[in-house]
Length: 121
Image 1: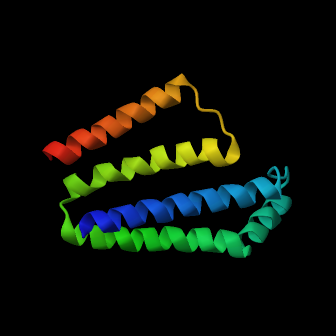
Image 2: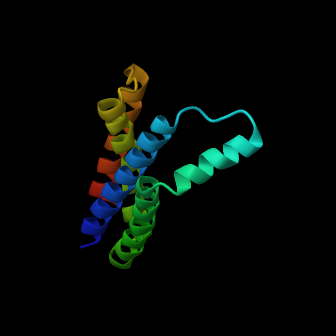
């Protein structure tokens, strides 16, 4: 059951990151002056989509709490590194962000590390 909560945490984190990136992209670049920046951020924070992303982050934290009731921290925590892998892959697929050789190699190392820890921790 602990791994189920970790998977749910990963999915909710991925959703939150993607939806916030999507809305920030639509909002355009950050304005130059502080009052304009405050308005920019305020408008984003009032967006139902951004609010859903923030709610997803909160629910991911709740799932993390549940996961920790079932698993040792040393066994559960390495799986949080998979958020980096998932978000980076989704950024490439959804937003067309570049994925060079360095990112691919780093991602492979992260996945290998998680597998080693999951197997031997």
